[in-house]
Image (cartoon, rainbow, N blue to C red; front, side):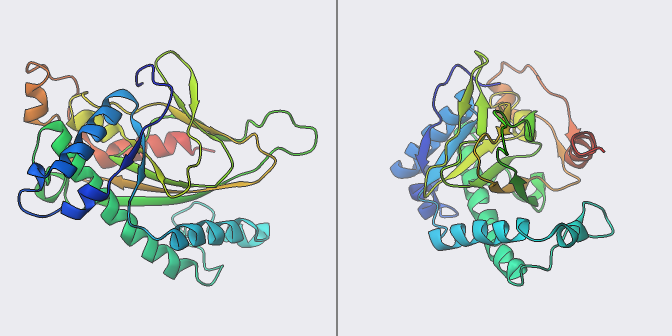
Length: 282
């Protein structure tokens, strides 16, 4: 659940991104600084902002703009992609939605992969720990979410997302500017607001990293409550293990817990399905 943190750290990941996939990256002083900051953030808060991520601000904003255009469509248009296998969860309107999101997803996927290299180093493993045979080809999910604002005489909005942890490895959130709705719970039970900071993504770790790290890193409860009169949009990218990946504590993480195994083996896809069917049941 995190510790008694009162703010969420901001990490400039540009030195890490510059050296990723290069030989001896783990010996670079700039990389090591980012690794130390990632380690501290994952141990204490389970949340952090990343700046220096290299994704153009114009694209980040356009993704939010096209998301808002989608939510502004008439109900009969939006219901065409109601969550069901038949619809495939894919909108055709606005017209540029697909091409824009495909570009954005490609960049988000690469950014998440490189951040996970830094997290692997922070745990004491090789940078490719969460790639290749162990994790398989990355499974990703991207959700565009709309949160209605306060209406009429409403004083408090209970429409949002209840407290939960995320299911996979790493989440990157592109949230609306100027609307403070994402909240993170510290160990004292206080809800810390993850305010929108221009030029950054909010990141948080998920359940599978808890298992792989043998509890060295644990995801933190968070929720969304939009008490602004404005409609809030959020574009959330989930970077996950392969659907069929069997996740269990890594040997070098078990060494740090005196050989005690804190979490048992879990298949990511089974965990995902159980969570989604519970959270989105009707």
